[in-house]
Image (cartoon, rainbow, N blue to C red):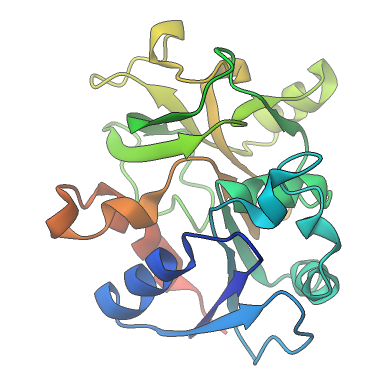
Length: 229
């Protein structure tokens, strides 16, 4: 297995992703510059967090047109696995690889703190090894993380079991109080209909090292090691 971390101008979680998958999980990881056209035979691509192109226009709106995105989109259309974290999730929705949009947080401020997540399905590579009866504590750090979609799209996400995570409290209760940014139905992460493209706003790579005080994120990332090629 080979993992590729795409680096855009303004990415700042690329090293975090490389450390999590390379140092902690022992996988082969390479960085892919946003102007590259060669994916270096990577099996799974990661769009990391950060502020690509300074978040001008909208978060992810310019990065969606980076040269490498032609290859990233083709990779996904071939059934290749693709993970977008925070800004990476924003890029995925801007590119049309995932439905919906990510709007300014309800309180109109940048939020950086730990939250609890509840897996909503085990019917995806990213959540296949997780326990739906427990919670996972991971950090968020975003100003535009409020997931929104029209009623029909939201219904399809629920009907097709595409919602991966919801924000919850420590006891696993999905409540308005546990929703940090106003996302519809507390949605924190989704996948596409073919279940090979994943996006989530929380940062599991920042909760993968014991030195950071939590390894709940590592359990999420370890699910991706089950990829077979």
